[in-house]
Every structure is written in C-alpha cells, then in structure tokens.
Length: 112
Length: 114
Image 1 (tube, each protein chain N blue to C red):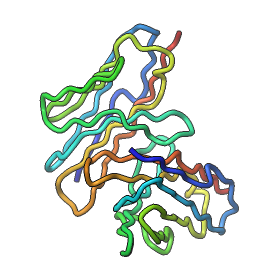
Image 2: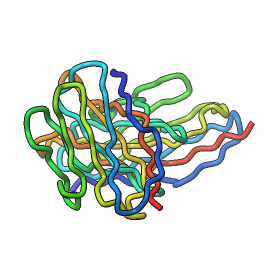
Image 3: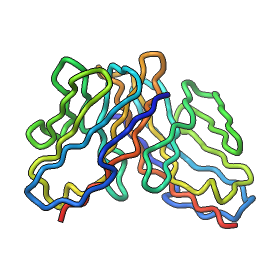
Image 4: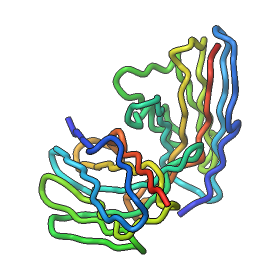
C-alpha cells in the first residue's frame, strides 16, 4: 500500500527565512509525485509533478526535488502570500485507475 | 488544466438527511474522482466515476452511503446519504486527463452535519 508522510505538520517562518518541507513516501512503482498548494476554503492547486529521482522543478520561490524515498519543497525568501497548506501525493503504476495517495499536508505560516 | 465547479460550496444539514453535491467540468474528461478531506487528515479517495459504468469505490466506502452518478463526460454528482455528524467534512471533486497524470480539483464542498 502506498504511503506518504509529510513533515513538519506546521511551520512558521519569518518573511525572507528560507526553509524546506519534507515528503517521505513508499510506493510499489512511482508514476509521479505531486505537490499541491491549498488555501483555506479552496481546493488543492497543482504546483509540480516529479517523475524520477534527481528531477527538480522550479516556480517562483518554490523548488521541488525528488529522491527515491523523499521529496523536498524548498521555499526561498518566502513572503506572507506563500502561507498555505502544502500537500504531497504519489501515484503508482499499480491499480486500474489514477489514484493519488496524499499526505496530511504541511501548514506554512509566513510572518511579515 | 480545467475549470471545475462544485455546488454547493458549503451546507449545514440535519442528521438523517441526504445532500447531493454537483461537479461540472468545462471540458470532457474520462475519469472523475471524489475525495473526502477531514480535519487533520489526508485527502482520501471515496470513488472513481467513469462515464457509462458503475463507480468504483475505495475500501471503507460503499455505494449505499455515497451513491455517485456520471451521466456524461462533464458532470458528476456525489450524494452523502443518511448523514451523521461524522460525515462533516470537505468533499472534493477531481479530474485528470489522459495526456498527463496531474489531477485538478474543484473548490470543495464544506459539509457540516448537526
């Protein structure tokens, strides 16, 4: 069974203070690892897909990296508008559908 | 990507009643998914809805409690039946496209059962 563990559960940063969010996973055969951002009262918003170890993706202040066991979402010089819950999910090759297995999310708060 | 509209965005319901949540997509999609997001918990897949066939339910979810319709390639409904306070949660509709594995989500329906 696919499993995703995210840490820490919550993170409070000062504006400009860079940090990383961790997503550890176990999956029988990784088809893709996904990062989403979720604001209160809204559905998850797609950020990145990573397919293989060593791959990196960047978007503004965010960079996602992937190894065979975990993924990191690095946030460089965050701003208050980066405050949100960040979700990690994996999709495996097993099974007939495109099921995603999610972690519980990391709630990021950035203080001005 | 796609524009996914869910209705209602929130509701407060009496226990024992049922609520039907609608999901409309602005383009045709093969697979639609329904998730539940309980406070402090992971998004959990309830079922996968394919047009023209019965929905496929995940372990712990049954059709009598969560009946799903998928009448065409742009629309689906999820009904939460005979509700109890334990059904209070956010329910999310999701779609993906054959051309890429990413899933896209509606804004969710926040359900409170009293």
